[in-house]
Length: 173
Image (tube, rainbow, N blue to C red; front, side, top):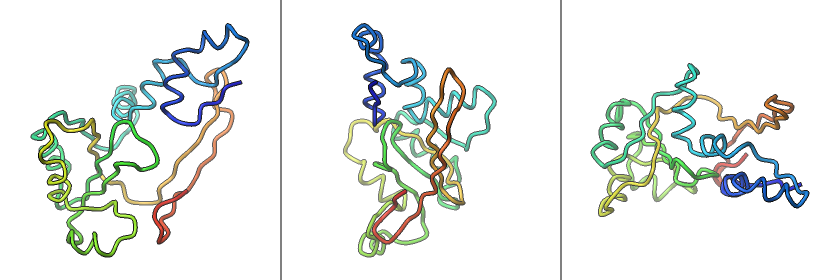
């Protein structure tokens, strides 16, 4: 039995399940199309929305002007907004956009910087020909949870909710 431990491994292994099966090994992944949707935050939000499942407001900008418009449409600077890569894990590339504190204060006093004013983040992206594949979405107040699930034949067998905390050394589970 092959158990992938990351999105990248899951995507790759799901495309080659038949090759593994031919050797007598089983790969614990969904089929490829499902993996592609689940491992892309933008595709997952679009899929859930199309299925009538309530999702936070979000945009999938492809240009800098669309990025600027998305941040504005979601209420920034009056409201906090989240920007994150469509494909990434462990909060890499996650930014909470907020005007609550100035950039110098954040840079000099935060151990694990994940909050910036939009202008500061926009300046970091300046000079690039194109923006990375991003999800821009409304910030949701409250306790942050991850839920790990194990499904068998399309039925959820086990669910493990994990409350995320933010100690002084940075966010962990």
